[in-house]
Image 1 (cartoon, rainbow, N blue to C red):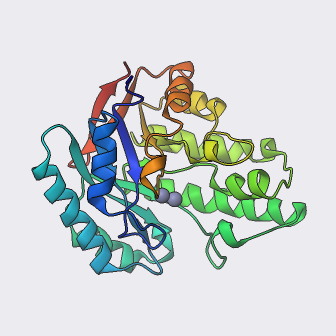
Image 2 (tube, protein in one colour):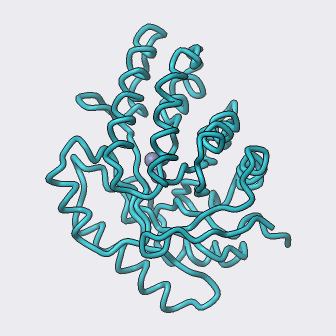
Length: 265
Ligand SMILES: [Zn+2]
Ligand SMILES: [Zn+2]
């Protein structure tokens, strides 16, 4: 079997509220696929996180990394909405040692997760605008390694609900976010979960990956955002192809918060 990818750095286990997969099952599936590096990135949505779950996730990643010698299991975290509670964020980041901090924004301040929202077109423009404003603040904050699913609201607004928005209206702030990320030496995630929904697109699409590169971005991480074993590495072929088209010749994994480049095959 031809290997799809050498790394997948966005994976959930039953230490996330929305997954039932034991961590060992994640590792088994990744080994079947010949993947060399995975990061377990359980949810830490900062307004409703569980210190017990994050500590367990971290400990399990360490144990599994010790147990298997043909795969590196990295201790990650998907830190959501960090600026909505700086106090809790400091506690979460101090709770464990992490290899990889993946930062995301699932809900803008005062709103529910985009997953639960069904805006009309006018509301969608307002929400997306506020999303990118908060994302820019998050990227300026800079206490993470990679920015997850940059175009997250589109997964639901355009792809699931079919509300058509002209995203070019947000290009100036999107460019500012990518430029800040690049200047800070942080990674942009290519999240392949969007490929599993009806119209199927990467989060973000190749044009933004290319723009990140042109703005001086050095690192990209690959994430399937799998919540079940069957989704591990799904879409990676397309994700890697987009990275190559954008001018990248490797993905990056973070070990002890330091970037290690993994050349594409
Ligand atoms: Zn996420
Ligand atoms: Zn996730």
